[in-house]
Amino acid sequence: MKTLIGAALAGAIAFSATASAQETINLTVASSHPTVVPWVGMIKTHFMTETDRLLAESGNYKIEWNEAFGGQLYGANATLSSVQDGITDIGWVFSYLEAARMPLSQVTAYTPFSTSNPIVQLETMRELYETFPAFREEWEQYNIVLLGMTGSDNYDVYTKEPISSLDDLQGLKLSAPGPLGNWLRGIGANAVDGALTTFYTDIQTGVSDGVVTLALGAIATKLYEVAPYISRVQIGTVFSGGVAINADTWEALPAEVQDAMLKAGDFYSKAHGQDLVDRQEMAVNKMIEVGASQNSPVTVSELPASERQKWVETLPDLAGEWAAQTDQRDIPGSEFLSAYMNGLRERGEQPARAWDKAE
Image 1 (tube, helix red, strand yellow):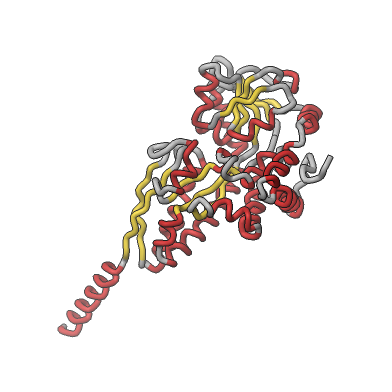
Image 2: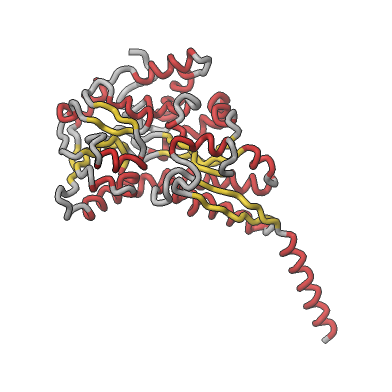
C-alpha cells in the first residue's frame, strides 16, 4: 500500500511540475475585416487552431489569444502599419492597399486575366517570397514577418443594372479596391476606390453603380442586395496579402513557437487556396437562392467570350507601366514580373495576355 501511495504521490508531483512548466504567451490577433470574410475567419479556424494543436504536442507553450477582428483596432487602410507598430501582434496585412510601400506585392493587380486558379497563384507567390530577395525584403523592412499568404477567388462585376457587353459599362462608376481600379482603364467605366467594407454603402448611396469584386466577399457582405446583377467575367485572382506578425514580437518568441507558427501559416495558405476554389460556386449559387425574393432578384450571366477578349485587348500595357515605374525606383519590377508570369506557366496556366512580353 505504501508503495502504491508513494507512486501516486510521485506521479502527482511530476504532473504538477509538468503543468507548471507550461508557459502561457499572450498575443493579440486582429484584422480590419470581420471573420465572416473567409480568409479572415480562417485565421482563427486554421492558423490559430493549427498553432495551438502543434504546441499542444509538447505542452511546453500555450498561447492566450486576444482577438480583435472586424476593425476593433484599425481599419482597412492601416493593416500594415498596425502590425508594423505593434498595435496588434498578429494581423492580416492587406497588401494591395499599400501600392506605394509594397510595389512588388501588386504584380497580380497589374496582370489581370492571367490565372483564375488561386492555388497556383499562392504557390507561385510563396515560391517568389522564398527565392526573390527583394520581395521578401519588401515585407520584412516594415518590421513584420509574413506567416501565411492570402488571395482571392475570381473577380467579376456586380451592378445595379444588367451587363451583357462592354458597351453597358460605358460611363458606369464601379468601386474597386486600390490598384484594381486599373482593370477599368480603356473600357469606359470609371473606377471608385473602395473595399469590401465600403462597397455596400457606396452602391446604396449612389457613390458607385456597381463593383468589381469576388463572390466570397460579396456573399459575406450581402452585396447582392444592392447589386443583384452578377456578370461572370473571370478577370482573375489576386494576391491580396497575408497573415503577418510584428518582428519584435516574433523575435521574443521561443523557437518552438516560431516553428509552430510557420507551419501553421503554410497550412493556412494551402487550406485558404483550396477553400477559394471549393466555395466560389457555392457562394454564387447561395446568392441566387437567398436573393430570389428581392425586388430585383439576383441574376447571374456570363460576359460573352468575345466581349471578355475585347476587354483583355482594350486594356493598356498595365504590367509594362507598373514594371517601368518600379524599375525607376531601383526595385526589380521587370524581373519580378517575368518570374511571376513564368511561375504561372510552369504550373500549367495559360494567361490570356503575355504581360511580360513587350507589345
